[in-house]
Length: 433
Image (cartoon, rainbow, N blue to C red):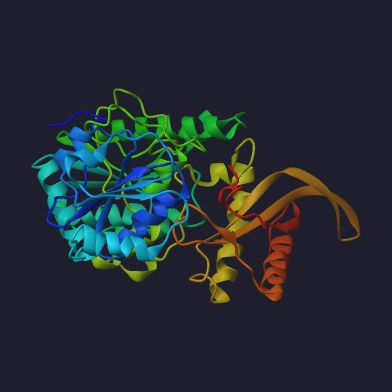
């Protein structure tokens, strides 16, 4: 059985369908072409650009796409077709390469991926128990569904109340999951521990590391109740990997990781102890966000779960800029609930990919009840995106913005200013920290 960080768990799906390897150039075109291959019904797998020719031969892909002008092994010598994309991408050229040059049938689908993924993790987990880090978001819900179908009650879904959750999040998750999946469900209140460790910490990366380390500690303690728990399952998706500064590891890559610049740490990919005590399984590690939703629908998850907006692993800690404490979190929860409620009421929830409030570390002068105030500011963030690698701010109707602002200023004590974030990604990120 593999040990932690061994790449067996991250190899491509079984080769019942053709696979195209994409050499990771570290550019947007890498993800774009990978997605376009899948749109054509051909499974694509992104690998480090310095992968050895010997390992490529073992993977036996139907073809290879090489993007940009970078060093790469002489892959042509192993007899596998190579498409070189020097700069501008043309769909027609990719179509010709897949169908005519490589002879791909184009019969890969999310249904196929779901079936192969279930079988893959059934084989990996065997008769062991697996702990699923359940948050109630789309990613962890899909992971839970895969594991429920793969190994049933060997799956132990654990929901940790970090004290950094959205309003009514815990109650909503318990109601949605408890008794509705053929898995064991457990809730742990660790909010005091998280907030104690975050006291006085302002730097975003440090907050993420603290949350990540303690998150794993909590799970390690919970696992003691499940004597045969060997695996930890997480809802890591491909954009998490990219933004954490790593690429998908592959056997024989020569350790060619960290090809992308590190943008931010995620508690599910960054800051993990070397001796975790679990073997890590990440069923969604190779999928983009919209593909995760497709997979969720294929697995039969409720539509409400599939279309929930993403929530970051570190929770409200990265939306409460600067130091985190209970008072600031309570303020942020109320503002965030108003944003989501009004977005839903205006039928804009499905038209936006993510909508939330952030509490800014600044105060400004205002007037309330004919008296001077010096209170906090809330930023409203709504973005539109297909893959979360790039995003644009959503144009909301003036009346909707007015209503959101009016309600926050009226209902959230200690806030006297609301601003709307009109920054695109890049250069900004979707989250503020």
